[in-house]
Image 1 (cartoon, rainbow, N blue to C red):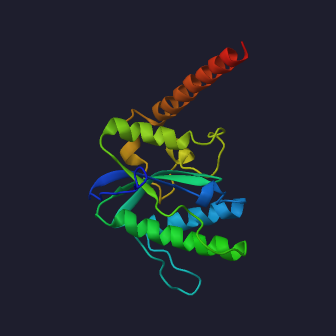
Image 2: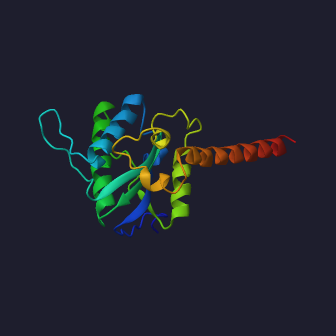
Image 3: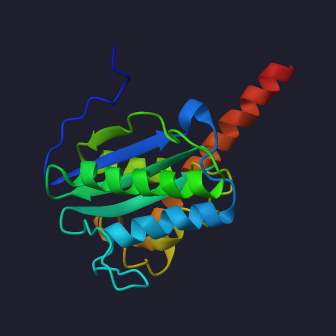
Length: 203
């Protein structure tokens, strides 16, 4: 039986939460350079402007079919929130990035075979409430999310990088401060719950 969220129905003009993890839950980012390389792949493929390599060759460009709204990279998995304008935008982006990153990783660490689980997961985001909550979930993935450099959280609080489209989500809040409060409040709730659980376990 197919795993949860592996059977995907692609719909144009829709938001999706994409995620995947390392094969057998192994780490897919071993140092800062790995994180930065994955981020450069995102930038190359979803930046409004076409990016070229050192020889003037254009990288695959998917901005017309898909936009990146939020992301977080973790040692053994990643989360992306995207908006696709065309039905195959997600499939094209995922294929480009996961293939390129696997080639980079295997060459760097002298390994062979798959790096990611066979099929990435994709969940359609149906409404604005879900959209707000999924960005918060993505940004809170790292325990030290305020300082974690490999996510889009900082794009929501300051000036966003050109390849991270924060406006559709920020437009649901009165200002950036309100979004920060929305994220921080949930962290406080979670910490309180964790403290209570710990007290009960040790009581």
